[in-house]
Image (tube, rainbow over all chains, first blue to last red; front, side):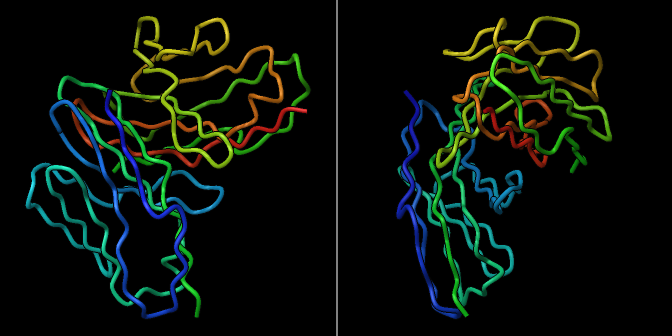
Length: 110
Length: 113
């Protein structure tokens, strides 16, 4: 069974304090690993797709990396507007559904 | 990416009633999905909405409780039937191409009293 575990559940950072969020996964043949951002009361907003180990993608203060067992979302010098829940999901080959983790709730304090 | 809208954005309903949620996309898409996000939990796929045929439901979800329609490539509805307080949740529509990234709508926040 495909599984996704995200840690920590919640993270509180001071503005400018860099950190990383972890997404550990088990999947029968990874087609893609996805990162989304979700603000309270809104739908998830797509951030990145990673397809193979060693791949990295960046967007503003965010950088996502992928190994064969986990993905990291690195946040460099975060700002209060980065506060949100960050969701990780995996999809196996064969047009299977996305499997989501429970998310990491990030709070960045000014 | 496609622009996705959902109606209603939120509702408060009495137990035993039904609510139909609409999902509209501004362009034709291959795949449409319905998810549930219960308080404090992550997203769980309810079903894949298939155009012109019956939806494909995930384990634990049945058509009698969550009937779905998809009359064309830009529109789908999800009905939550005979509601109970346990159905209080956020319901999300998502769209994608085949084996492509899924994009989500803004969600419908449902409270059942």
